[in-house]
Image (cartoon, rainbow, N blue to C red; front, side, top):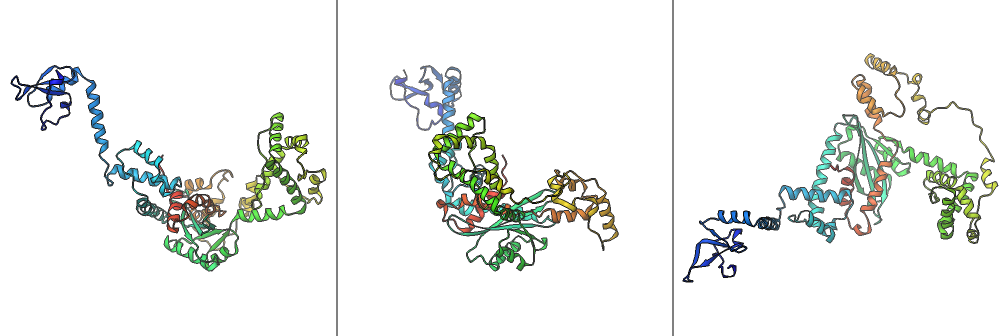
Length: 484
């Protein structure tokens, strides 16, 4: 029966006509349009110039066709692309830009076959913008929005402290990164990367000063009495002096210089040299490394490798010694094994004299009262009776200081900003000073931490990035807030 059916005329376009047709009149010249015939079961269904009866027949007797129809409608819907200015498309584009910035991906990731396959699977209607659209429109607009938010937040700061440091990319281009630190209205210690500028001229003090001054003007920080924290490089120290701003030397660098001087004491240097030699031997020799693992397992020691220190990091020497002492039984056992001793030509082992040579000139030490390290570092600042004398303050300020001194000391492990958030109303004058000084970081490490992200951004694959793009990507990588 279905084979003798005629297709409906072209003006009948409803999807149900896929399953129905008409029979010819007996004379064979015209179609019998009063009844439609189901192509599935050959049942005649009354046709009254609408498809209601036809749809009811399919729903009751052939429900499987409903699923097919819905899938066909869904497929057609996915064939329609999202307009670029639609809310859905804009939301996805922003998410892709966020992915590029936070995950430090190259702009060309949007042209990657795997990425395009992923996006097609997640949202077939979405048309991925070009890399040029992301690099010249989407990400710059995102940068402008975040920059405006940070600039607004900075206006509430009592004072802003800056850290800065120079670094060189893999493309041998020099940059100066500046970070800002301040305490907001809720007593939260905030920090942001402000900018990364290309240093196209020599790193003399006047050139660095110009970059710093430009940043202070651009971010309108002149009235915030900025404090600048840097390492002890002569050029950057001189640059801050030329700006007539308060300079704070990086405590981590000062500590490192002092520690490096201590590590150069002949007795200490010889001891470190021998431990370093042993660690290097186990790193070079696969036989020795394998034997060390055997002895570690036998002695129940952690399967840790020996550490080799880095000359510029004093704490790496401490880590090297800690690891050596942890693994000393396994190291000794491995060095005594015949397999290792056959390869010990360039190995210098520790003798008893090496171990005790550091005790040649012992320094007399006074017996000290036990106290926490933090209390020792704070010294007289923490002692109740060692407060600086106050000479010309008004009575109100004097009374506030007196009440503050009578307050119970908080534990050294507690965040002082939490205390000030609760007591700022009781000490309004001192609270303002607390915001001015507690925002100053002790080290310039925040600006140095940008190096790792910068190294991932300015790779050989992306060595043609302009300094403006480097600035925008680093800025967003550190400052863009993501809701997960």
